[in-house]
Length: 255
Image 1 (spheres, rainbow, N blue to C red):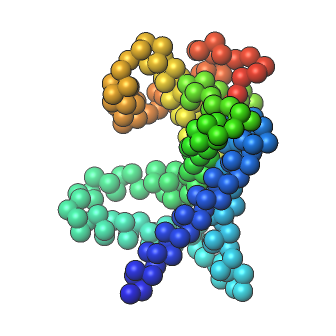
Image 2: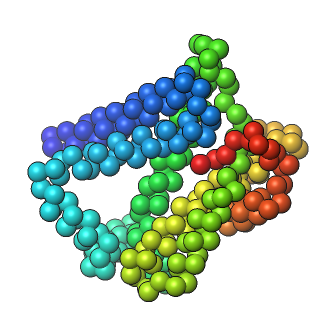
Image 3: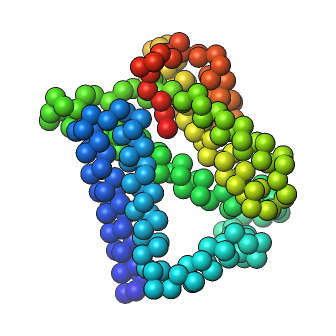
């Protein structure tokens, strides 16, 4: 019974969160926010509600909340998480010996970079909700235009300094120190951002070449699995080369 109640509670939280994101995204569209501002509104709403669902239950015990936070970013917390993951994979027959060499990468760019992965998730949901809300509202009222095509999004040029800052901190920071963790989070977030920008460029050319929709979907899957970092590099290089020749003062940016 407790398991069922836990599942229902989790579902209720997810539905409430998505409902709030849909509400604020729709509000931003009706108030004629620019597309990038609409996406940011949805992403910030997702972040605020997600953090609130964690913080509110802890209000009576702030010391416990801080203790849990500190424990997560400690070496002890990581080792416990790593052991649990290895044990679970062993139970389903995974050869964990092949995974152990990647322990350090997992720690720096997945476990310790959890805030960056969360921010990327919020951003993606903001983008998806922008398209969903635009699709519905543009059919109901002329106040809301159709969403701009994903292939036309451009990463704002000044954000390249965020990626550069992450790389610089990584070189200068002490291993596993606070600055090293910050650097890892910056790198993960901006790599994610420029990967989205790279996929936007890929989408532009696949559409330009008039590939059938099914072939485009297969291409996206193939590119994601086998040339992920190439797509990210494409997004970064677009800062200087403007592969689609779309950069004008009116261009919208993916943020």
